[in-house]
Each structure stands twice: as C-alpha cells, then as structure tokens.
Image (cartoon, rainbow, N blue to C red; front, side, top):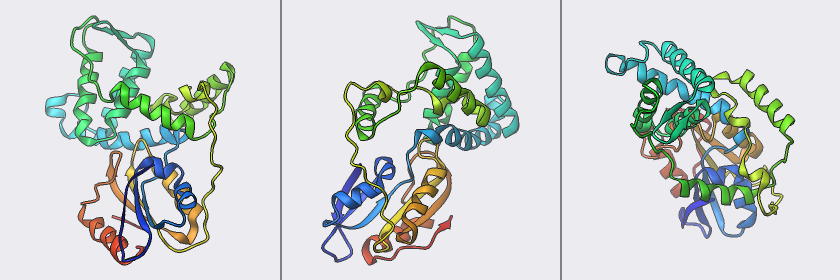
Length: 285
C-alpha cells in the first residue's frame, strides 16, 4: 500500500512511495493508477513463504551484536556461540515452557518475539530481555517485552487477508509444510509455514489478478535491506526480475525492516530518481 504520494521530476504524474505493502503487489499500483503515476519507489517483496529464510538471515546481525556485548550480556562470545545458545534455549522452551506471570512462554512465542525484534536493531535488547526471562526461574513476575501491539497485527491481517486468497490446508498438510520448513531453516522452527488467520477469513478475498508488467519505462526503484526479516531479500530479487529492465534495485548491507533513506550511499540516488528521472543501476552499498 502506498505510504504517500506527490508530484516530482517536472512531470504530470505522481510519485508513489511505498512500504512492504506496495512491494507485495508493486505492479498493482502501476496498473490501478497507470494514468497518474510517473515513478514508483518501493521496498522489497513481502512473502510469508520467505519468512523463515528472512529470519535466519536477519538473526546473524543480532548474533554479531550480542557477541560483541558478551561482557555484559553473557550469551556467547562469538556469533556462532550466540546462535547455538539461542537455539538451545528455544528448543528447551519447546519441550518445557516456562510461566511468566500469567503467560506461558514456549519456543514458538520466543521465536515470534525474536522475529519481531529483528525488525529494528534498536530492539535487540528486547530479545535479550525475553531470553533472560526464559532462562530464569519459572513463575517469574518479570513481564515479557511487548514488541508489536495487538491493534497493529489486527490491522495487518485485515489488509493482507483481503489482498489475496490464502490456501486452506488440512492439518496433515500444514504439519508436513512446517516439518519441511524446519529442515530447510531450523533456526526459525517452521515460523514461516504456520497457519495464518487469513486461511480461515470470514470473507473470501477478491484479488485484482494483477501481475508485474515488464514492459514500459524504467520507472521503478527497489530499495532493500540485505537482512530484512519481514520482507526478505530473496523476495525483492524476485520482484526485480519480474519487472526486468523497468526496475533498478539498490541493496543496503543492513538488517532491520525498512531502509534508512538518509543513508549517504542512497540518499543522493533517491533524490536523483525522484527529481531527475534517473534510475540507478543495480548495486549494493
């Protein structure tokens, strides 16, 4: 979904600046508003099927950060040691959940807290807080961190579940998909293959049936963090390929969900794109 729009570059059309909702169906914006849009600026592709992969890629940034602070955090002196210790704690919670106040913290909940906090490096301490609670005595009254408010998730479901039709698998198929996902990305524990409310939504979606149109002017700029847990890099690459010569993509060697458009390596290129219709070549910075 577009985050905002304005006219730029001296043309008649508007400029759509989008977040991950635009990235899920970037061509949809092009087709639905073809007569009004001159340029499209979008983030990487949003695809839950890639979440486990994105989780694994993004976790490396947290592990490196935690290892650097091992003198005070005490969860491992190397990224590999932190990863192993985190996975061991998560597997223990799978088998033996702990009670935190009136809440039961199991492995799935701990993974979910971790994934949510991976969206912004500033949230890394929340993972440590949940980890310390999980490693402490059961029945502790220390509250778990709240990363994503319920209302935000509800709004997300309301949009995504109406965006497109979701498969309705039976229990055996779901279990098989989760097992396969666990084998491919063991760190995520099947997080990207679980059941979403969208599969049992009260209304059937009416998707627009729009596919990326690779024919047209070079007017699509994709900005993507290399280790984004929510809109994984692989999805952005798929989006880039779908638009062929129409698009350019800048990959930023950073974690978190959402590109810092003030970063020196991209701010000038974004300005040129919006004001001079100059689409940069594919690059990493």
